[in-house]
Amino acid sequence: MGFKTDLKYADITPKADYLNRRQLMVGLGGLGLGAIAGPSFGAGQYSTDEAPNTLKEITAYNNFYEFGTGKEDPARNAHTLTTDPWSVKIDGLVDNPGNYDLADILGGVDIEERIYRFRCVEAWSMVIPWNGFQLSQLLNRVGVQSSAKYVYFETLVRPEEMPGQKRAILDWPYREGLRLDEAMHPLTLMATGIYGEDLPNQNGAPMRLVVPWKYGFKSIKSIVRISLTDKQPEATWNMQNPREYGFYSNVNPRVSHPRWSQATERKIGGGLFSKKQDTLMFNGYGDEVAHLYDGMDLSKNF
Amino acid sequence: MNILNHFLRKIPIWLVYFVGLTPPLWLLYQGFTGGLGVEPIKALEHELGELGLQALILGLAVTPLRRFAGLNLMRFRRAIGVLTFYYIACHLLVWLVLDVQILAQIWADILKRPYITIGMVGFVLLAPLAVTSNNWSVRKLGARWRKLHKLVYPAAVLGAVHFVMLVKGWQVEPLIYLGVILGLLALRLTPRRTLARA
Image (tube, rainbow over all chains, first blue to last red; front, side, top):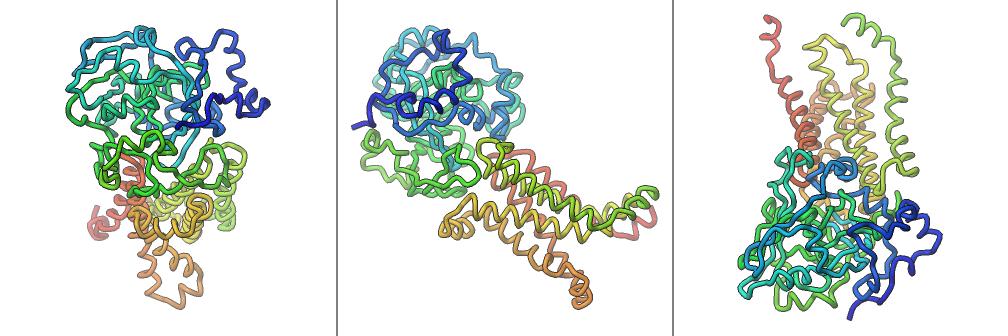
């Protein structure tokens, strides 16, 4: 099981492109990469061998309504966000609840590189070389109690730094949730970097969830709270419009969304004449995750 | 206002057409050269759609501007109308050719997705107006021409509703377009006599 192993973007991108793509980073390279992104040794096992999008594409086209509803708004507005100091409240059905400083969290986990497909519910996609750690490592550290069934996440609320929150476009804070087995799955990542750099603010700094087999909105950004619960937690888009956004929101080309056909997608970066490509069940991660949903009607539990 | 009207009378209509034709070409050029960001197809589609709504608003504003502000843009109204149709046709074309691409999906989208159904109905309502935007049709249709061209009212409302429905959540910008269009239509309901007295 798994994808082609031990591939990093350096292996699959022509050297010239790679250098070009990473021009921005060359200067940073000598400093041992980002402070919290960390170097990434022996990534691989779960990474795709598809060509990753450029750093510019990944950081210029974002949905992060806390900074505005336009795709370019987060890149324009997110510089105001203070990500240091940063603490995460971990509570609910855990053995060691508390407010954990980010440095404390990162001290006890292994940062790896994971090149994942990323599929937005709006029928566009990217391939992103994340740096991060498996959420399971953090959950194991704080001790999940046996009665816990779900994990709930919350994004920061700070309207003075997040201008989009000054209006009730969504019911802030942004909320998301996973079933515990989804959260503990080795593919489920807490990302702290992209391309070996610290996560840019518009991508959810300093720490965000990445669940590659679900639509992008499940991968909640700039997390300040993680709570273990025994009931299915609230999830922002599901609350906003339950007919359109299910709690599971697994990528599924067979379940059409009222706004977008989910059968195909367009990978960002192809220009004006970019062709569409077929969307894969579970975004191509079916071998890894399909068993989580055995016996479930995925057109009902969409 | 008289000076302004006097000045406006001097602008040749061909210039309005010429200037009005350029924005889609400029947007297309930007799409080719990276000026529309990393997803130029959606950007082009949205820009053209908004341009269409703005032109619709300008066209709907001609009558109230003359009535309430004394500004006379009547000479340009046909050009504004034809350009409106041109922008919206470009918007539709980008959606068909560059965005959806797949014929089966186009039909499915039109039938199954309410915001697309509504947008398409709006476009279909505008088509006969574009076709009859010539002196021959005005003469031929007589009083029916005026009646026919009232179709722009429902088309404008449908265009704005299309925008409101296609965005996720309650965003401000589309609601402003809808509000302005409804406002311009409401102005037409004010009885003329009351105004003459005021």
